[in-house]
Image (cartoon, rainbow, N blue to C red):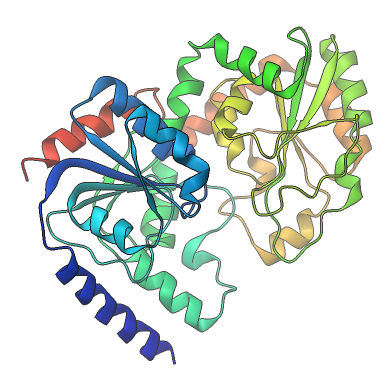
Length: 381
């Protein structure tokens, strides 16, 4: 059965190559994020940069529900349906394809195309790719077909290049160690209007401080009601840092919409841009999410709340001992409160700086510029 799937994928690739015969646009870029689900992440930030700095590029976006993103057409973008013939033809006749996840297994690649895989996580924390295999044999085969398509990866650190791209993704091709386009916002810290816009959108007073709680996705597991009870953390934050605090939840998109309605917190799971939430947050609370890498670039406090650490470590695993990370971790609410109350800014700053040095951070705030320069050079190849 697995070989049949692989064979069908190869046949489909050949058919699509024939159908794609036509005008080639070396300055057209096709973007899709999270398998066509969102206008977000690294593809969004690279797109926004190109539209402003490189208007000579034609922009195409692919969405699973294109009707939800028709407003982008008013900005001069062309919209196609993800995984459709129009999507395949647009990709095969464009100079560049940009994604933050795997390409479909059936997707054909022509020599004239340049595929940029930005991925969607920095650092090197929980295991991914071939280092984390719980899928069926069939899905593993299709994932392998997707993973081994020629592309250039973007990397946020030397450790990410070695452990994730080279080892887990088994990529032997080109890697641009330039950081992630979405993190240019967090490194530069030049757009305070973003924080104002976030608070206004979420109904939070401008003088209120934000604790952003963003737990990672857990497979085959219901969201515990314990997730929502963070009064002890709010009280500790007010005592340690002062001010009035609002708790903002950001659940993984696969479980978004499952939060009960209450005035104890703000549900920002549907907010379209995680980086803007990170920009607006004063403190981040998470567990194993790679958002800790992004938020760490701001230098602001972050705390880990990991009540299921032992189980997660066995099921998923990490590239390094979580206890060596620069963020204090707690497995109970009381430990979390203690970590907040005992937070030492100077010691934390030193640990954070050493962590980014040890992992070899490449996030400098100029990823978009670097990728655009690479694209210009690639047009000549």
